[in-house]
Image (cartoon, rainbow over all chains, first blue to last red; front, top):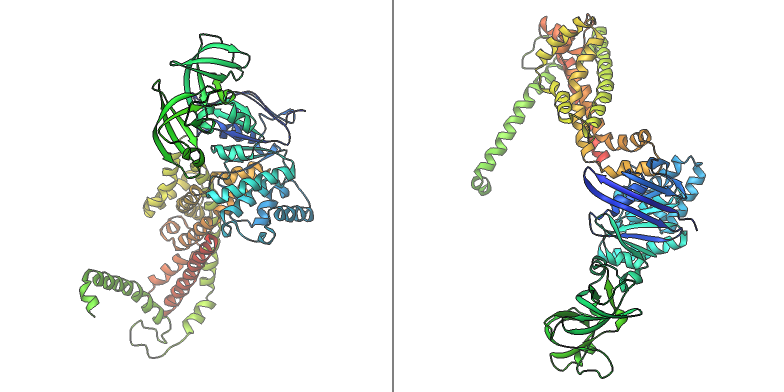
Length: 356
Length: 263
């Protein structure tokens, strides 16, 4: 299938400062794609280049296979939902949504039909005559979304649209956004710095850092198979183990971690005996045992810190080689540990080698 | 009563304020009441009341012509000053334009240059460009004087405008001109109305520029000035009262409009 959006070797500089570097990105039609990264990682610049508000310093952008790099925003078949909604304060809700339709030259009854159709999609039928400042944050959000969807764009761009909402409303809107995306079948490109948002809604997450793509993939793949320290740290939490490879058998590497023998998944990396690498281990992938298991590999350690976090606790465990691991443990498992001296284990596929 | 003695500074402030209001309103009240006095001499007491002076004024061709002429100049001035002022405000608000601060300072200069200096320099200027004194010259001078007020009001409003608004319009298919007409202008409207009414009032009020640049046709202030030279009369009081009430109404209406637009 032809990608609906294609960035080909795109660079963007502001003076000497690099905003986006060597960006190659293809988006399949109908997908919910999230650009995820900390502020200044280039995600918003990427979105604005696609919307036509920034011009790449070099490279090409294609929409439906046609180059759009030089087209002004009004000539592109994409629409943006802005972070602060940018509703026109002097126009009613209905007129806001109709704005793009009027500019397309639609007849007034067609505009009216489409507007009320969109308003009913978000259950705001009775709000057509309201002014934007008479709406709540969530309602404004919905109106901005419908205004951007009204001209029937090929791709809908969303620039951190949920960041101004409170936590409860944000979760509700995440579900609503996802369902609107599924109902309309549109390609959504969503920008956020919130990993939870990215994991909840996306088909594909593109993790960006310092103007480059760190890794892209399905949310569960990104979570369970991070390729870099940055991804492992930005999405969820991780323990990082610096260890030397002693042997590789298929997908499993045996490593020496300061005197302890451990196993880890090579995670697509080419490694050989003697390489120094980093292994990422999720705190929730680790389990604690009161006694040494007979059949599996486990490391002896001592609990040095307990932090109660409600549904679970975070234990800091010091191992006999002096290193510390953070373990997430549920209350049932915690109650079965009689003393601070425990054994820690993990499934070898849950430990992954990183490329850096 | 205890309250007043305990808070002496506050009481003094309030009293000072009311004294000022009295000082402000007393002459106006005096003028207005004299315009209803049925006698030729301006002095108390008023024994008989009349509307005779108003009837005379309203039938006075000279007065009506002067009002029409002043209104025409005010209208032309407002149109010119609004177009130029908004244009300058847009230039000053645009990032990356060279010398924005200088443009702004120069545009605002006429607001602080003394009217007399302004008038004399304009008089010399129109001689140089071979423009006769009269309507065009007056409008030119009034516009130069009115532009700074439009610039300042439009710019203040423009600075509070989210940049995303025009981006959103562009995104939804508007070219820069349509985005300007359909989003920027409506957003500026409250400030523009205020600025326009300010233009009208300064233009109608202006004496010194008109005096230096005008032709034979008198504007309202010039007519009143000419009449006062011949001695004060109840007729002048009636004229002034009409002008006072009309301008007060325009001012209040402007305030009402901007308030409504802000809501």
